[in-house]
Amino acid sequence: MSLFSEFVMYFGGAVTITGALYAIYKIAKRLEDAIGTDAKGRTISERLDRVEHQLWENGGSSLADRVNTIEMHSIKTTTELEFIKELIINNSTPVAAVKKPRARKTA
Image (cartoon, rainbow, N blue to C red; front, side, top):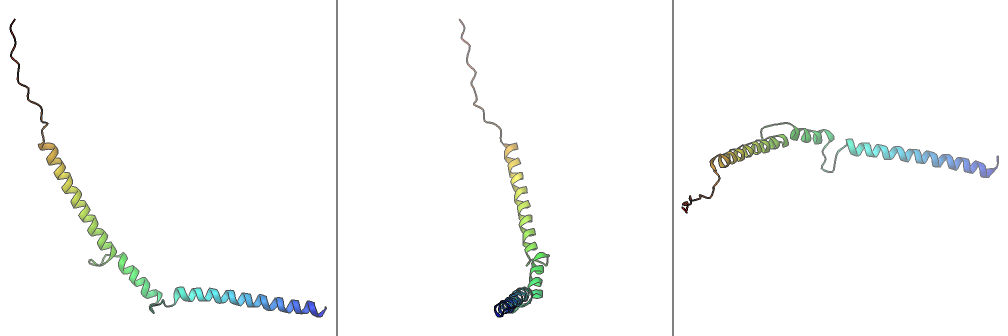
């Protein structure tokens, strides 16, 4: 083998190994960013606890409690509107023009 081909072989191997190590580093860095702490210093467990707190009813401060409150108000408003609509429809009588009877002309 010539000196040039040995150089290319070793250089290619070194570049391949360096590329593989860099790819492993990037994957490890992504995992650490996902699993490690965020900018505020919270771990993934603490962040998931906050999300879980919002998903389940807990007496008024969760998202589920707020949705339930909105639903109750919506049902109440719908019921009131239906009641008012029924009152208006049942109590309103069509106003017909009252015609006075004409006197018959005798011929």
